[in-house]
Length: 48
Figure 1 (cartoon, rainbow, N blue to C red):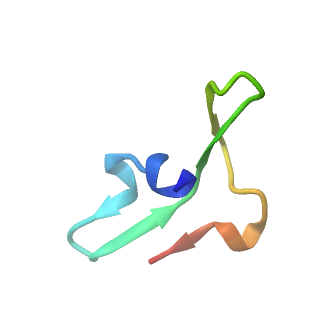
Figure 2 (figure 1 turned 30 degrees about the vertical axis):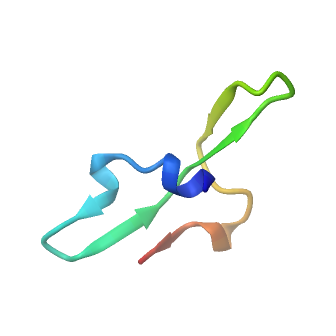
């Protein structure tokens, strides 16, 4: 869910029919959303 919510228009390519996963959203201890620059692991960055 954090990967889907972090998508932007620049992550979607209609020409190539791909979606790039480059960021995630998590919550801090006060339940405020935090946009992380990268997923936790390198395997989390992918093109679908």
